[in-house]
Amino acid sequence: MCLKKSTVDRAYLYKALSHKGNPGIKTLMQILNALGIRFTASLASAPNT
Image (cartoon, rainbow, N blue to C red):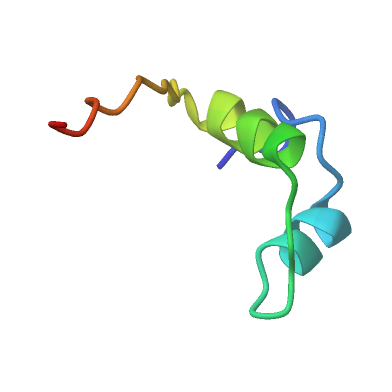
């Protein structure tokens, strides 16, 4: 990953992605953006009733 493209500090990145880390959605989106990855979400299909 190119840390220069990321707005996340290196030390925070290591901490957030460690075993005990708990990164927020904003942090994850910044990391994915720096990697050139687009994250999308879609609605789950409704259960048959």
